[in-house]
Length: 137
Image (cartoon, rainbow, N blue to C red; front, side, top):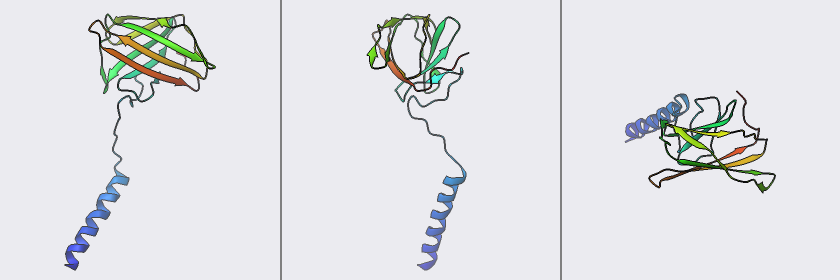
């Protein structure tokens, strides 16, 4: 009996040590690393990466790291700045998983909400809290 108890305790110690030595990457929905040098949205079902461009901003859309087609969709971006909701901006969804908004600037502290309605009626949404603004490219 004592030998069996020692074996169980040794197994527990080994599994615990492996958990410390071999970190396991687990991603929740919307918890992905930026692929284009931008900022990722706050833990939503779908991942949006917000990237500064010379013409404005582009959002790349993915689900579990796989591109999601936005073609034909209607993207609407709402900005809350210093507690005031600015007029909604309508963007374009001309490429596979890219949404473009022209002539737009953000400041530190802006809160963004993106909503895309696809021709099928499906709706995708995400939010950003730009604590440090948006990295420029």
